[in-house]
Image (cartoon, rainbow, N blue to C red; front, top):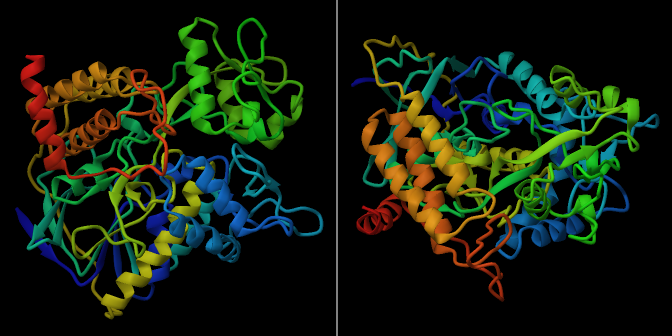
Length: 520
């Protein structure tokens, strides 16, 4: 394998966490590995709701932390929740200075929305449902003006090189279907900020390329993975046959939209005191149950928003329009879709992974903030806070302020993953490791994943299978229902403070292998 050595810090991913960290590291030189052109294909650019922060005088970081703990169903790290919520306001102000056009009132205050499980309106938005895209646009503009940031567009990371427990390189290749031979890029430090795992599921709101590869890459290198079983299913993906499924943002329910079934019945009022604003796991399971009963659940925005949805929520209006739905006059069919992974590469409070010289931020990480069920709009907030924390840690280790740009040329032909194998993996995850799980289904999922993994040697697919294995294995071992993890064969939540799961890929694979004889 060709090798290139640079004094630059290597950042894998090009979403919000990656670019924010790159800006915080300036003038230290970084090279950003971006599978798509900047702003395309990053989960953060697709985020509709906004960033949660206690900006109102009646609210406080303590209230925000309490809501985070309550939503997380017993597995949130309280110290992390306090840290992140205390810093939230600072990052909103920083993004404002960087050019993010947050919605403001006539007297200059931030427009705040209330989302599920929040006790206050504290979600800072941009143009209604454009927060992710507009924050990314501001960060991209700043990154392009920063000489220390080099972006390698059209490249993807597929493997970490580890020596004596420390990361010493990352193999990268072209991200198009030709998939060249990988090049080993050796830098001064490594930050993984490459997204989560939602695309491992057949029904997802995630960009097509976000399929657990970064988590799997770290897992295959030996990193510890935390809370892998906790996958958040967004309750109100639009059920219109698109892949990925368009998202009907939770902010719509914050504005008064209600959930009804084909008979016109509101079903959330009998499920939870907060009805449509119940925690996401509760709403997702209720919608799933309506589907299972053949009652076709729908989101009704007609009375709450009417024609205003078209100006206040332009993304949702666009999705509706291209699917022949007039949301001012018609209901929007919805279904739960894999949306956010609370689990990921285990990090300490400084954003460091269990492997030396490796930091992680954003959805690829598991900091302990989200617990078993992420509080709405805490995802972008966590990415911002830990991007800065990781940048500070890397900066303390790396003092170089200048390095030539990385110059590389890809050669040969690599191993692109088989499209049929990916489709089979995604269907297995939806069918067997989805909204409601049981032991038989999880064991079958592990058997299916092992079979698919053995057929396709491409490193990208191997990374997907590693993450899928970890999700299914930890879900099998957690014999209770907690937060987003629902077991039909263990419907009760065990009493007391739950422990977070920690597992290596070697441990997950050993569990998978031990079950193989029972299923063959």
